[in-house]
Image (cartoon, rainbow, N blue to C red; front, top):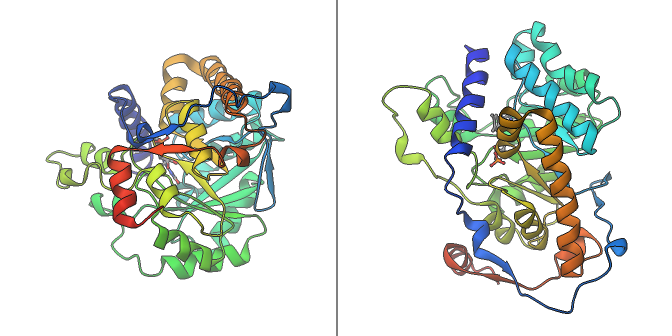
Length: 341
Ligand code: FNR
């Protein structure tokens, strides 16, 4: 059942990517053009530092998969692409490994293919401290993601229906593991209240992972006949809305969910994110164009993000956050409703 579920997720996520119309709330964010603010490319350092972590580039491959033969092969290819481009990478949820140790290789293949890379393990908020440690150990992981997927669980008939213990569990794991813990959504976004709560729980960083890209309500609805919760498609907050909502909070924020191109990455950094993650879009490239295609795409994004920083006069990702941006459309309405300046 679980292996089938993992394979279904990959198939339906890629179908969603192929059908994407293109518009999302990143389009409501634009830089105020300044014809004279450009600097020299050699002045730009895209390295990002947060929570004791340093990445050479503020782009990462976000959590997706593992747990079945087919998804193990995908993890191998994603890890090769991460190794060749130097980007950090996360594995998918390791619940399958806790249920069945014979799936270990479908996750650990990431470390085998990418021995020196930055790898994040991934567990859900019901994992025990012992499971969280096992996940980190299996991958010799550099960080641990804990995913928050309340809407996905709700849409799944076999999903969890008890969520009240999540906060206590996250707090315990954050205090117990030896690597930084990054709490993340799975495509429905983190509100300011959620970010503040995570801050109190002692996590090192939060990945807002908003709407506009992979939609797990739709994926779970599409997995069965007679979509019971089809009215939830599109539920949640976009990454730009989350970043604006959480201005002034203390923990570093990572942006993901609906990031389509290097401009969306630059927009995320301008709204205060320390790094930018992509899942569905890179998965589609891998399945349509192979590892070589994914390596070429990530390399192009890295190159173009530095080019945009050069044109925008930002020596570092943090300097992009000082650029003037205009907020329009639904995102502007959101800011007005939420009292965001
Ligand atoms: C995911 N995502 C995810 N997240 C997580 O924390 N654990 C997981 O196991 C998975 N599984 C998973 C499978 C597939 C096929 C996809 C495409 C995604 C969610 C992912 O990390 C991210 O939060 C969302 O996909 C939003 O980003 P994109 O896809 O819009 O770039």
